[in-house]
Amino acid sequence: MEFKSSDDFLKNESFVNYCLGIDQQDTAFWVDYASLHPEQLKPMNEAADLLKDLQLLLLAEKLKPEAVSSLRAYLSPKRRKYTIFSRRYAAAAVLFLLACVVFLFYPSHNVLNPPELARYSTHQYVYEAGANERRAINLWDGSFVILDKGAKLVIDSSFGQSDRKMYLSGIAYFKVAKDKGHPFKVYTGKYVTTAVGTAFKLQTDLTLKKLKVELEEGKVIVEKKNGDSWNLVATLHPKESISLDDQLNRSVHQKFSDKDFSRWKIQEVIFQNAPMKEVLLQLEIYYNVNITVEDNAVMQETFNGKFRHDALSSVMEMVCFSLNKQFKFIDSNHIIIY
Image 1 (cartoon, one colour):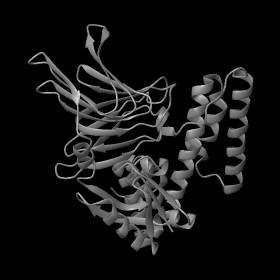
Image 2 (image 1 turned 45 degrees about the vertical axis):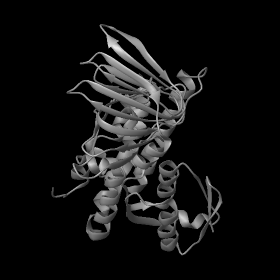
Image 3 (image 1 turned 60 degrees about the vertical axis):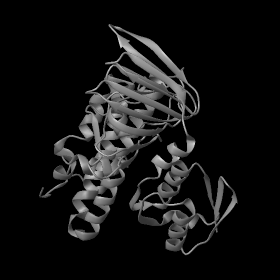
Image 4 (image 1 turned 30 degrees about the vertical axis):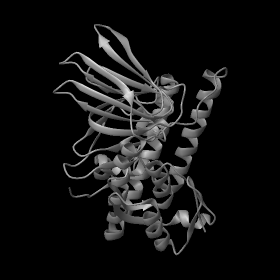
């Protein structure tokens, strides 16, 4: 696609994901694009600024619809060519009106931190892993997902309002950010797996009507749809799994091997121009360890690497080599980079 103006960038979903920081691959692509096309920086920055304004607008719409008419005037097409000076006045006016909305109409409620634009999106977000490569996803609520080869995850447009709803086909691992007020729900055919703050793996075959749930930590509830209601199938505790087969009308509830589970997680780990903060967070999840950094300046670095069934020590050697740092194990679950 040829980009001639800020409007062209705004129409590109990958660019929107980059601006909102909700997709690692999109971020890497647009960072490279900006370095290769410096002549496009001006329309890119204009588009990014408009998205920030729209984020404020959408928040206002959710808080009090009656207040948005004044806000839309600042974001109308006729005003897209306003000067930097007038832009600042517009942003200030938007912030002022938002503050008034919150103060006047919601004095008795605890207002949560302003949500990302994606949380109030009007369309679904679709993530797919390639046929020959897994995909790692950082969701905007702080949760982390590994999509196995060929898997597909659809994030519902209502994600983050009353709950965190999504739909999965294939195999995926979820490390769920804790949020008791918004249960994390993964729908797979006639089943839904619900968690608050936990880590689990789902393996589903919608054609054969099979589902396998393996719980690494925390607690999950598995339910099955029956008409208009949901019936409890199982409540899982750490290191428990359940295999469901609708065609055979059979379920198997058992313990599973922690070593096999960990081996599946680290079978393929890929980083492409990934921020070091993200790299270390993912390594903690993949290998079930805590990583401490003595020099916070390393968090400004990025890293590229691809690992397959590599030991944690080998991965840490490569990461620390790129940082010109060293590491040591305090114990089996704690690493310090110094």
